[in-house]
Length: 148
Length: 162
Image (tube, rainbow over all chains, first blue to last red; front, side, top):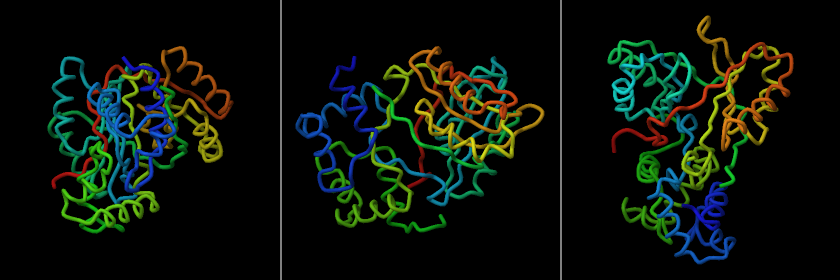
């Protein structure tokens, strides 16, 4: 369970910390705790799976890489098998099962833009299923913060 | 890799993409791992942040695990002539975490605007979707909401190798 302090930590730390010698100090002060307690809490939240990670959020395209959203219509009987084949690619950053005829949605992030086509072709070949490529054409992104 | 990153930047990215060490001086830790100077690591990371390569240094919640169990990918078939004007209005709604224009895949997929709506339950998501519908008005011909059933993978971006 998360207590009130955990929730304040999760909410505050989504806004980001500075890149400096002691990056957690300012947040700890804001929260009214010391740095060591903040770090211990973050470790616990990570271990409990409340946080996926704490660190830099890299922007794939600005790194010169490729990024796209892909959708597949996977027969239910093959769902776990296909998820395993898709997830085995290190370029698959996240993958969600969704309630729709297109029931598997994953994001591909590659080092070079040309790698997207290679990975898509590999997944098509491995699964025997069509992969629908839906690259971002424009971004209208502000960025929600979860009130935890 | 093309672009403004050199080999040292890429080593820093590989060392930090799964997260920072949760110690008082994480950049010193990273620098020691990579046999670099901590000031150089911080300088390079600040440069990457200024260039937008790093969006921010932050905690990334597993939104399921903190109670946002309803996550609806709302998708909309919006007039091509209006989407550049309306997209930013949808993206600015506080219930929307990501908002993108993507290609249609006709006839299977008529939708060109994707707006991710998170909520503690489906009612909260439905309320968000209603706000988007009000925002788009008659310029959205059709829409759907794809609820997530489960996370199959969530690692964030990873550079291969290294």
